Length: 158
Image (cartoon, rainbow, N blue to C red; front, side):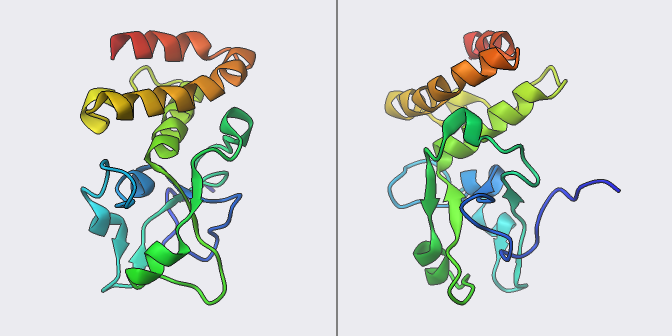
């Protein structure tokens, strides 16, 4: 049986299995000017469905690449939007970690094309630098698993 692409509620969200990928990229974090474009595509309060990818379940566990950098508690922010589970903390990748998780997922795959366009997703120099700093954390592990050249070639094309 194949692994589903999403969870449709937040019950399995934890520090280990935080929300990542496009749901996290599109979450409007108050400290970041990026994201928030398609929030309702992933968090439809009217239907009661969340459509989220979780690290270590739908995405690879990237702790070995990034540690806990960029994983934040969003319980309060989600509760303000009507999403909460009694007593459960909800964790999500910030935009930089979510993009970095997507890049590592691609790097570990056999796909030739990475669908992240740095200039489009992170238009300011500061935003790009934050993403590149996050990716720097992954370089030793990417080298170890033989995928550093793939990522560096892609970064050169950006």
